[in-house]
Image (cartoon, rainbow, N blue to C red; front, side):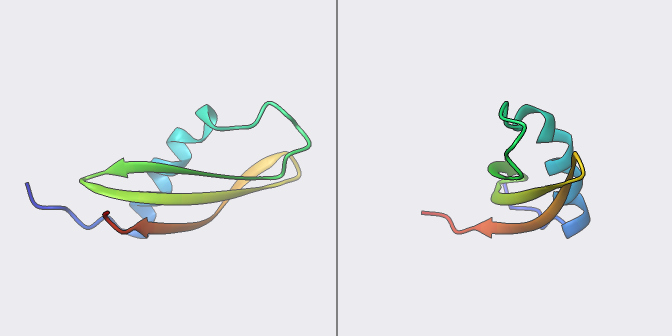
Length: 65
């Protein structure tokens, strides 16, 4: 199956839907990053916490090994 190229908005929407599973238990943490796979591609996304709200800051498609 061919890979489908996701838009940045689609990647962000997926990352935000997965975010609750990755929020650190330590409330003093203010950054987090995680990987996920969608449509055959692998992505790393990062969030920063501002005033108790996690904000999406970046995404990067990961090269296949």
